[in-house]
Picture 1 (cartoon, rainbow, N blue to C red):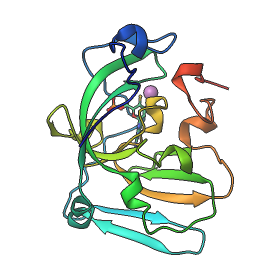
Picture 2 (spheres, rainbow, N blue to C red; picture 1 turned 60 degrees about the horizontal axis):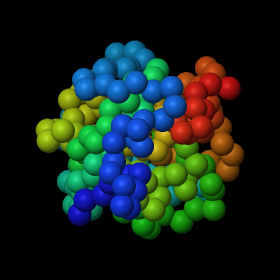
Picture 3 (spheres, rainbow, N blue to C red; picture 1 turned 60 degrees about the vertical axis):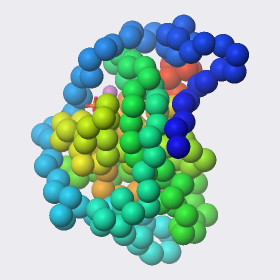
Length: 197
Ligand SMILES: Nc1nc2c(c(=O)[nH]1)N[C@H]1C(S)=C(S)[C@@H](COP(=O)(O)O)O[C@H]1N2
Ligand SMILES: [Mo]
């Protein structure tokens, strides 16, 4: 299956439609990491969703891949003003990972190997809006870009797409993550230029 975000029926996609305000088009793909790159082995890789009852849903690498990955074409927008359009990615939809998770909490904290965190409303992870990506531009994700697996939430600024994602924990309130505590916007919609607050 293949998905394209921000497709306009009867209208061609192009930078005018795809570039949010204040963004500049990039062909290359910058690396932006706060701190050192963690090197995570798929042999020991573990991903978990923790709900409010204390239940932990875990997947090892094989179990995770067995959920089935899909190819998607999306645009990414960094708060530091670069955007990259029509990127080919491959990843497992968060809908599949949340299939058997029962929660009444509306917010999620993403935790990464290495300690990075970022917060996101649960509804922004569901309904085909977000993935845990394992490949980009036809190749397994480089470690510096978050390999073996990273969050991909293309409709929000790219700092929400946690590299080396390790766990999602359910939260009753929208607590700020790493950059959000340092002044980045709590939500981060690039079309509304929600950069800082
Ligand atoms: N674990 C982790 N994830 C992260 C970051 C980070 O420092 N650590 N940086 C964020 C920011 S600010 C951006 S713009 C993107 C950069 O991803 P890239 O290096 O693949 O371009 O990753 C996001 N995810
Ligand atoms: Mo960023």
